[in-house]
Amino acid sequence: MKLSMPSTCELCCKHIKCDYRLREVGFIGHVISVDGIRVDPNKISMVLNWKPLRNVSEVRSFLGLWVTLTKLLQKEIKLVWFEKCQRSFEILKAMLIKAPLLTQTESRKEFILYSDALLSGLGCVVIQEDKVVAYASR
Image (cartoon, rainbow, N blue to C red; front, side):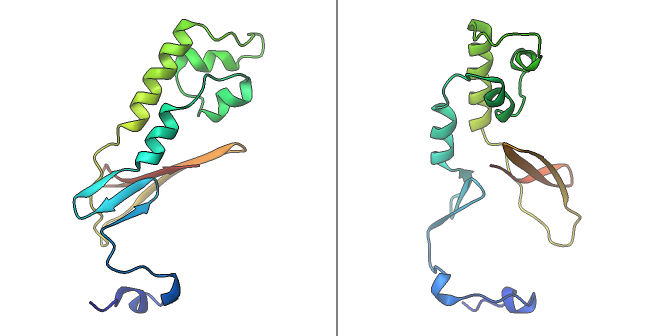
């Protein structure tokens, strides 16, 4: 198989940094294989093993997330981790590990990139025709 795409796009590849004939490859928090695209199991375990949040900074870094958790960001409220917070936290973790169905890209169609960044992290979603193509966070 000849790799023609990099040269037509004026890209250079160092062959020492390339891997060939891989059955699967990790990319932006996903594993791409002959069987399709799935969430990287390491990312799933990372989400499931998150510990309860301890301070406002940790609440913010967890993306500001859920109404119950967002209320903990108010200055006049002392951070007290109660049962309702824990339930919201567990539900949110469960939702994060369920990958939305990703669609294949079509190079001739328009892409839309939504992104957000804080001092503690960043995230983005790539969409084509109202369908998620990829998402990433750090």
